[in-house]
Image (cartoon, rainbow, N blue to C red):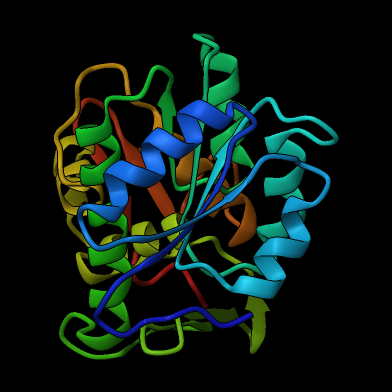
Length: 240
């Protein structure tokens, strides 16, 4: 599935069953030159994504027909763009599950429109920048690990590893700083445009998912190490 990586109006598909809220968000984002399509049912949302190839998918958690977590789980392997989830619930478990399934960001309703706008712009800026202006070089090699920024592809022993947008960006950040500790604050500022507030666990969850997908030891990680009290360390010589 291909999405638009060129500059210009970004296409957003908002899957939200609250029609009034969806139309208010649509009207607000369109003022800032976003093209916003609406879908109000979960069971028809995957078909809309495959048909329209939106640049960003915004998913409500509670939807008629099918919930947002289930949709995220299905689409993550094939949809390459950012996924943002939001819900009226105020429970940490929803955030954790959503991020574990590959969502790139998470907002709790009622969503402040300016915050949503900032998050969307940050996600698109990261995605488009990494597509067209990868840091230093467009490929990084560490033993059997290959990270290709131009194709946004990762492989180990020539076997492709499926990563979400957020997972790829986090891995690229760590790999470009191989051998150096990256803390949560700097990671969040780079990846999401704001610092660590003491509660956000998206970086920790992303690290956990990367370790699992990249064959690291969850109990005694040696490829992406935790440096207690400081952050995370990508080990460049641990990929043979």
